[in-house]
Image (cartoon, rainbow, N blue to C red; front, side, top):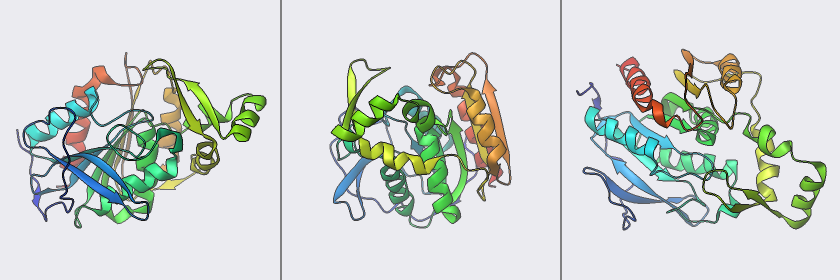
Length: 274
């Protein structure tokens, strides 16, 4: 099935790089310089020449080639949607070290991708911390955003996982500028600079967040990292033309067993623009 869309200018990112994993038919690899950093983002684009452009924004210590990202890409191709997925700096294919990752850096990365769309608007699909990043990028590029689909958005991530650390751990983190955290999914540990803590404090959920586009939120009932009440709080804080929030029965944080529902919500957003 193909939904209607508008013919548009081609996406302006053109440089390519060798892909680590096989690239699905129709996709091309790209790299994009982040302004004033000398660093490059790398990802994949599917440009059908139609507007808007869907952009998948992955979460903390994740990447653009996971099961959820691939499932949404497959759906986008079937619907003839233009689609972009990319790794944020410090993650997998893109430049930078994860130790230096910050929310501000991730927001800057996403805005660079949005600005590369040659005037076309975007639908942002943000997963976990990518949901928080999408919210703030949308607030800074309101005229460029056609809609938001937020998947277990990590709007209280900073407070729940970092600000709640014991005072002695926070003091040691500040003193050494680095701390090791257990990696809940991959195993082992990862290190993160104290700059992340200083930076993330400015991204607390405000009492009111105004956006000029429809917002759809999905959160797993059995989310083991962030409670669904965080998404309910976000829905209450949003001032937008349409806000739809749903708790998905039986789903965990990754929502990997709910991809068909994610695709239906994406279609609903796309249809609402016609």
